[in-house]
Image (cartoon, rainbow, N blue to C red; front, side, top):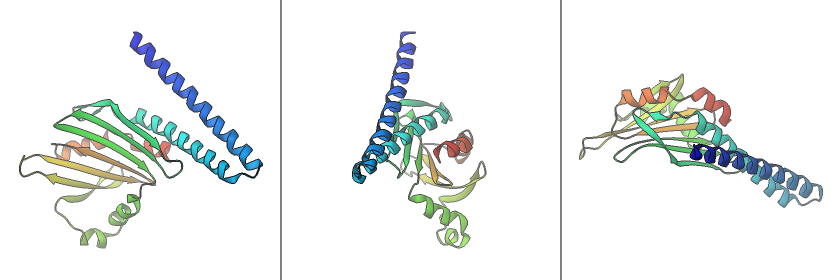
Length: 198
């Protein structure tokens, strides 16, 4: 019970501090702009956007499943960062070695353009044909599934890249099957993540 209370207290304090930082950065940006100090105004706004990305990332984490397949979440390894307007980065890990999984979400990822080109133009996709790569649909989103078979261990790892507007979600699973990774991907609340991450 003490642990639950401590966790709730930490969450409330962090939300309060985040709100204070956000308000402080808005105030600093306004006053710097009013005094003609555009460089300080810009810096304060970048800080404000970074704080906003962090808050959005924490909301996205709440939408991620507690399990991927049979693998439980490792909340201690959660990573949420904001880059101040360039994008949001969320990473969550599941399981333990040797069987692990991860979900990575990047807003404004530089890979989005090239992935969308492969997915939307059959000629490019055909020229890059690889028996270890295929295009599938996950909850209506065209996605690229990459298979990596390790001949030494006999284990197969998969990576599923799902571009959704300007957000890229990548699901990686070790020692799994195509069926398991697609089932896991279908358990993720993609539409809600897209709605929050934009």
